[in-house]
Structures are given as C-alpha cells and as structure tokens.
Image 1 (spheres, rainbow, N blue to C red):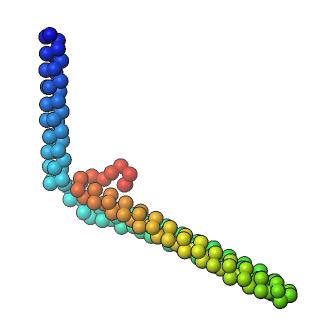
Image 2: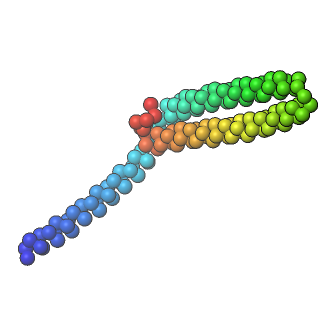
Amino acid sequence: MACIKGKVLRKKLFTNYTFLASNCNIRLYKEQQANSVPMGPAVELWKEREMDKTRKKYEKLSEKIMLWEDKKKKKAKRKLHRTERGVEKEKLKAKQRFIDDNERIEIIVASARTHAYESQLKEELKVKEKANLMRTTGRSPCTCL
C-alpha cells in the first residue's frame, strides 16, 4: 500500500510541478513581450529587402507572362494570315479558330496573373508576420536572416 501511496504522491507532485512550470513559461513569455529588444530599424531593413525581393520576382514573372502572351498571339495571327489566302470557307474557319485561340490565351493569361498576384500577397504577408515576430520577441527566427 505504501507503494501505491508513493505512486499517487509522485503523480500529484509531478502534476503540480508541470503546472508551476507552465505558469513560469507563461510568465517568462509575457516578460519577453514586455521587455522586447527594440529591433525596429533592423526589422524594417529586413522587411524592405524581402519585399523588394518578392516584388522583383513577381515583376519578372509578369514579364514572362506578357512575353508568352505576345508570342502566342503573333503565332495565331501568322496562322490566320497563312490560311486566309485559301478558300472563303477556310477563311471563316481560320477566323473562328483565331478568335477561339485568343479567348483561350486570354483565359490562361488571366489565370496566371491572378495566381502570381495571390502568391505575391501570400509571400508579402509572411514577410510582414516574420517582421512582427521579430519585433515582439527581440530576435530573428532561424529562417529570416
């Protein structure tokens, strides 16, 4: 019976210890937030560098999308001119194919632009969150710098 009491007693002590430890952790975390090291300028510089990186990345992506669009439209136009020299029936088919190709290209380009814009917003949001984390904790996360 003494063993059973000992186990129960140890269990109670252990739960109290973890409870006290969790209170200390909460208290320490609150103290860290209250006494955070002012990293404002460093965080701002890091944030601006990251924002510039993402802007440049998506500017390049946008440029690639425009080049792809121009290339496909020129190709469709060449194909139209090539077939327009033929019979009237083929001219109508070629004209309709040209219109369909342009519509398809517009849909693809709109989707690519939307996806690129959403990705840019997500990356910028991550950068802002990391900057806020750096401000509150006073140190940089291991993935930041």
